[in-house]
Each structure stands twice: as structure tokens, then as C-alpha cells.
Image (cartoon, rainbow, N blue to C red; front, side, top):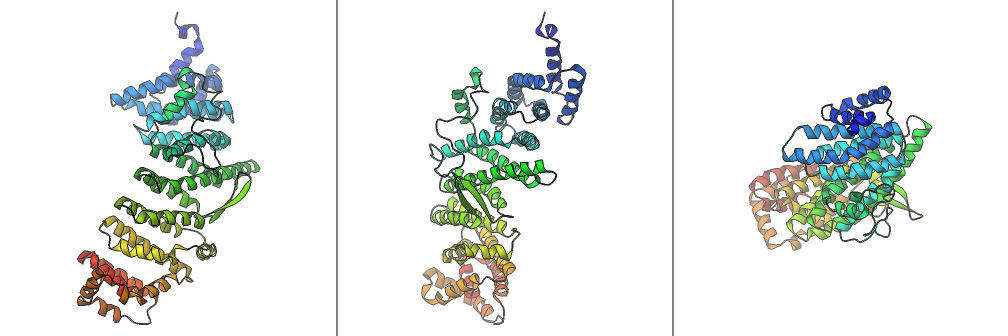
Length: 472
């Protein structure tokens, strides 16, 4: 007699998992509710059987990828939909959550990233939706956050979390709560530590950004309906701010690392970090018992220091620096505060638009051999001027350019003098001299952009001359 014949429940469970291959993910919750009510199975017993069935899913996914089967993606989606629905029905069950994280979610993410990142994102979103509904962000904070921060930190050469990090980890630490939930021989500490190395850097960063975005969204929508949701929003807000603190410090460190690290910092972390500062210019965060301020300006002061170093290095480093500046000013132009934000930055004692080196690098970027850098430079310049126009109280541009113009005759390089002479022969100087002296700084910049578009087609070496004639 087979096991399924001896155990009717096992027969129902086996039929359920077979049906997951055919049933679309959207229909899975209703199917599970029907089985639970008609057969009398508990959601916890079904969830435990799902945990036991997971190795079969991983085997099928790997075989399906080898055979290019179209069935496996649907099976994985339906499997995750079933697990998340059962988690939701169990409520704030910490044991079930931790079992799902270590025995299904993390191994599945490790398996999916090399084959289908779209399913990875869907899997994470489904789980974080359950976490938000059950207010179990504390489980994610104690498990997934330090796990993936550790992976990123180790890749930068750290052997333990930095002194001011909120989420502590070390080279030999594994996951909090792992002892009670990973008792199988293939899921012990040593095995999971070795599995962690199979996560590429960009996937670890991507998962951290998914966690951060989900918890930010949860805290934004938490306090609208009831007192309980207000508590959820407040707790999620604390986690979001703590994670923001550690991500900011990690990002600054990554900017001085390899091209892969800089790419992850610029393309994954910084867009999410800057987005967090769109509606809040600063956050009060408790770090090891002390209240510290994490402000947009303080963060960018550190990032600008990294950019200044990168400017003097290779082509990829310069390109990344302009990417960071472009991203910063694009995000800054979306802030809610307008003039108040601009004034707040100056009150903190740092505004990059007062830095002569900033304008020098913008000018260098406009004539760079790399077409992408030229496009980024003109974008940064235009965005900066829009910010100045919006604030209507910032004179840093005109002050910097006036100072620059006054020093031109003695400061031109040999290349600059030849460009200046050629520009005059083309009438650029006459155009500038003929401008109405009553034109304001903004109108003169408009004229410069028109000249730039014309000269970029003719020769970038003339742009510097146009800058010298026109900017002042």
C-alpha cells in the first residue's frame, strides 16, 4: 500500500501540488480556501507540506530551464502564491515567516536570479505584501536585512559591520533565528553561508532595494485607516530610516570600490536613496543610543568628495561621477520644498553650486570626448539653472561665472587661446557682445545653450570659447 493510500491527507496534498503546475497564480488563493473548507485541512498543515515539497520545485525549475520549458515559471509563481496565501491566513506567525524566509524565499531567490529576475521581483513583492498586511517587518529586519547587508559588506572588504552601522553583522555570523528553523542537513549554517556566496553583488543590492522600497511604501500607507495601522506605519518608518542610514553609508563606501560596486551604487542604491529625500530633507535616526541627523545635504557632501576623486581617474570613473551628479540634481528638482529646500541646503554650510570645482568639471564635461558625459553635463547644467530659477534667490551661478570671466585673459591655456581665436573668427564673440546688456543671467544661459547645440555639431573644442564668452 502506498503512502498516499494509507494517508488520505497526503493524497489531497499530492493532488494540490500537481494542480499548481496548471492553475494560474491568481486562482491559487480561491483553490486553497476551497480545499481547506471542503477537506478539513488546516492552513498550517498545508504550509508545512509546502515546505516539504519545495525541493521538488527547485528540481523542476532546474530541469525546466535546461529543457526551456514554459511550464516552470507558472509553477514557481503558483507555488509562491500558495505559500504567501497560507502565510497570510496564519497571521503574524513568526515561526512560519522565518521558515518561509530560510527554507523557501532565500533559496528560491538564489535559484531564480540566474534564470528569471522578473519572477524574483514578483516573489519578493508577494512576500512583502504579506509582511505589510501582517505587520511582521521585524522578521525581515532581523533576517534578510543583515543577511544581504553582510553579503554587500564582505564584497567591499569589510569583515564586520562598520562602527556606526545599525544592523550589525560579522564575517562568521549567519542569520538570526537560524538555529531553530534550519535543522535539515542541507540547510545548516555552513551550507547556508556557502550558498550566500552564490548571490551576485547586483542581486544582493537589488533585493535590499526591494526591501527598502517595500517598507517605505508600507510606512507611507500605514497611518490612514486606524490606530493599529498607525502603529504599523510608525514601526515601518523606523525600519525604513534605519535601513536608509546603513544603505547611505554602504553606498558612499561602494563609490570608491570597483566598477561593479560603483555601478550598483549609482544604478540601484542612489536612485532609491535620493527618492527618500524628495519629501524629507532630513531624518532623525537613533544610532546606538544617540540621535543623529541624516540630511540630504550631509550625504551629498560625502558623495561629492567621492566624485572629486573619481574625476581624476579613468573614463569609467568620470562617467560614474557625472551620472551621480545628474541623478542628484534630477531628484533635487522634484523635491516638494522648492525655495525652502534650497535655503536649507545653504544653512547647512554646503551647496555644490558654490563650488568652483563643480563648474570647472561641468565645463570639462561639455567638451569631453565621451558623448554620454557631454549629454550628462548639459543635463546637469540645465537642471541646475532650473533650480536656480525656481528658487529666485540664488546668485551663485552668476557669481561663479563672473569670477571666472574676470580671470580669463591670463588663465587661458594654449588650446583655449586657439579656440578663442577660432570662435571669434566664427562670430561667437560678436554674438555675445551684441547681446542686450539688460539680459539677466538666465537669458544669457539660454543663448549659451543655443550656441552649444550649434557648436557641438561643429566641434566640441569651441564650446570652451563659447563658455568663456557667453557665461559671464
